[in-house]
Length: 338
Image (tube, rainbow, N blue to C red; front, side, top):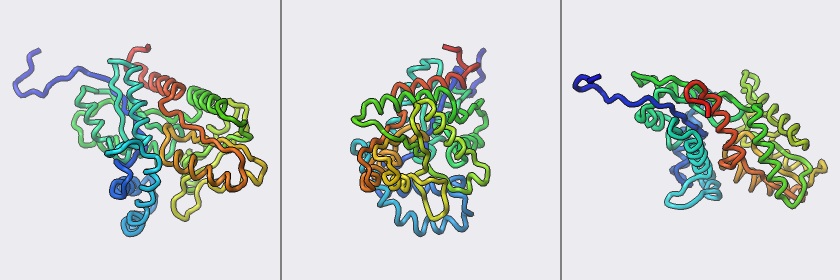
């Protein structure tokens, strides 16, 4: 059919997938970290304090004191220079590339960060420009929380409010108890433990913390974490204990706290410990610096003998197989089964 003069180009309809992770500063310097934290900590789902109270604290105190320390921690794990990138960004990019290769020409796979770059609005626009009229949004958070999965969806929906022609959307459900996820975790943990020069007496599953009030308000995150830890322990036939890391501020957060648990375990007779972070799909500042560095020091100084941090699923074979299986299930009806 002949299009009338001035008609916008008509693109071949495509299916898109957008993998989304939490975010990262653009560089391990104070200015970049300040921009990143300013965006992250201004999210009303992340900090559920009235903005009239919170913003003066954030702008007047936190963003003037915290960025330098956080930037120094990022520098410990940063990869490359000028400006290089964080492990989280590299791994998410590798996951997207692997999924693009897996699905082939029938699906366009892209990636974004909820906070920082590449942004969700930019990558959604790129998928639209490529002709995607059906898009699967895949937040890479196994356990659902309003401060993680929900805020990704918020940003997607907010972006689409400005679009006249919106694509059909699907969103990846939480997969905290999905057999594909538990199997991938078990394979990864089992393989890494087999490579250690000691046998752990306990596996500590450390999840990112959330304020205690989120549980009281109905957020399912704590329950999702507990189920993941239980199912992982059953799959491994190994004692697994759950804890929560990365507290911010003075309010009570979900317990037990990881740092205090690491300091207490040697006194309870646990001298050989492995730690895994099943709430993260990719290694990042909280795993590589907070657990693998600070956590190791805490445990050994408290009398521990052997400590191992076990990496996240990342872009390793078990994790990629799991991700391909989850995405294929969600894309059913949009793309032919392979």
